[in-house]
Amino acid sequence: MASEKQINVGGVLIGGGAPVAVQSMTTTKTFDADATLAQVLRLQEAGVDIVRVAVPGLPDADALPRIVAESPVPIIADIHFNASLAIRAMDAGVAAVRINPGNIGGADKVREVVAKAQETSTPLRIGANSGSLPEHLKWTATSDPIGALVQAAMEEVELLEELGFHDFKISVKSTSVPVMIGAYRKLSGLVPYPLHLGVTEAGTLVTGAVKSSIGIGTLLEEGIGDTIRVSLSVDPVEEVRVAYDILRALGLRHMGPEMISCPSCGRTNVEVHVLAEIVETRLRGYKEHFEVAVMGCAVNGPGEAGDADFGIAGGRDAGHIYAHGEVLKRVPQDQLVDEMFAEVDRWIAAGMPRPERGRRKLSLPVVGGPS
Ligand code: SF4
Image (cartoon, rainbow, N blue to C red):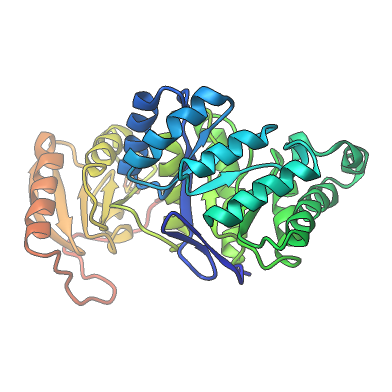
C-alpha cells in the first residue's frame, strides 16, 4: 500500500498518495561545488525531483550551504559514521539527511541528530542495506535475508519512534531483486512511513535497468513505494531516464515524450535501430508529453503504432509519416526524421490538438507480422 504518512523533502511531497518522486545521486566530489551543481543541473534537466550528495568529510559539509542555495532541486545529504556532519548539513539547510542510525556513533549521537532534525524540521531517510547489516543480524541474514533486512530497518524505526520522531522515510535495499521485493513487501505491512525503493548497486546500464525495472516496477505495481532511485554505474542522468521509463511503463508519471519502436525483421529496408536512436536523441529536447512510433515498414508498423501521436514507417527509398493514426505524407527516406519533427513542432505550436478516436482508421494496409 502507498504509505499513510507523508513527508516534505524541500517542497517535494513523499508518500501519502503523492506522485512517486524520482531521485538520483551525484558522482562528483561534493566539496567541488561547481562540479556538483553542474551535475545537479543536468539531473534537473532530465527531470529529477530530489538529488542526494555524499558528505564524507568536513570539506563536503562546508560546500553544502552554496549547493543548497544554488540547487534548483532539494538536496539530501548522505552521511555515515559522523553525527556532527549530519548536524552541519542540517544547519546548511539541506532538505533531508540520509543516515544509518546503526553506524552514526551510538544512542547519544542518534539523539543529537534527531534533536537537530526536530529543531530544523528536517526529514531523515533511514534504512538498511543487505551489504551493511548490523553484526547481530549477519548470521540471521545467511538463512533469512529478507527477515534480517526488515529487522534491521525496524530496529532503526523503533529507535526514532522512542525519541518521538516520525518525520522519515525508509529503505531496505539489496543487490538481490527477490530479497528487496520481499523486504519491501514485508516492511510495507509493518509501518505507515514512506518507502524509498531501490535495488542497490544494480549494475551497468542494461543490467541495472533490468534489475531495477523488475524490483522497483513489481513493487510500484503493487502500490508499494513512494520515491525511487535507480542505482547505475553510469552517468546519473541515465538513472533518471530509467526511473521515468519505469514510471511511464506503469502509467504512473510522464516526463517528456515517449517513443515506441519495432524490433525490426526481414520485412524492413531501413536500419530501425539507427532511426530509433536518432529519434530518441531528438525527443530529449522536448518537455511535452506525446508519443512517437518508429517502425521498420508500412506493413503492420502503423497499425501497431496506431495510438501514437506521430510515427514514421521506413521504406526502401521513401517512408511514411503518420499522425494520430492517419498517414500524413510519403517522403524520401533521408528526410523522414526531419519532416516528422517539423510536423511535431507545428502540432505543438497549435496547442497539441488530439482528434477524437477509437481504434484508428489507417490509410495503409494492415496485415499480420511479427511486431
Ligand atoms: S513487420 Fe513489424 S517488426 Fe517487421 S519491420 Fe515491419 S513494423 Fe518492424
